[in-house]
Length: 205
Image 1: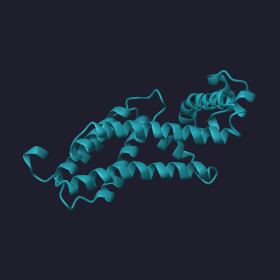
Image 2: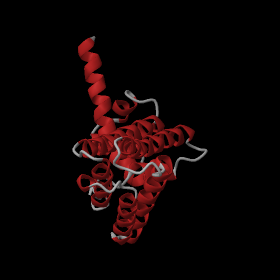
Image 3: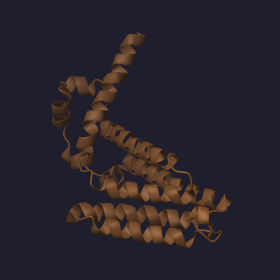
Image 4: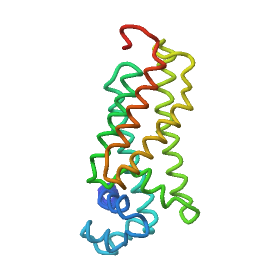
């Protein structure tokens, strides 16, 4: 029984990992069960034996992609010591992320486009991830203020909203125009704003 359960879990995860790039690149409407069957080499019964519907696979695919991206960002942040370094590392990651087209781009953007009234669960999932990503930025700023690195006037929550929104917008426009100019401009402006809130200590510069 345990072996069977583990095998089913592995098959389910395998389907999610194979289907996730499809949904990220083609969207819910553009991805068919046939597409999923082709990339997994499974029959329709093999797919539906693990999921109730295409919508469930889509939801799980978004969770998989979003959490993978979040884990990568956490690792980027963990490598740095100061608040400035952590924020700059996030900005550098997004600038490099734009160059990586193999996975189809940012899942928050791609799934969010279809997160309307027709897909309320996905809409809620995307919204929760947005709060998660903004919260990461806000916490870094707040911790920097508490450590005496940033001025008390640094508006953590407002800056988090601004930074996240500007980066996601730059990702979208950059992919459409096939240009890195917008992202480079945005990251430069955000870094300049961060510097303005630094407490002027030699160790912080």
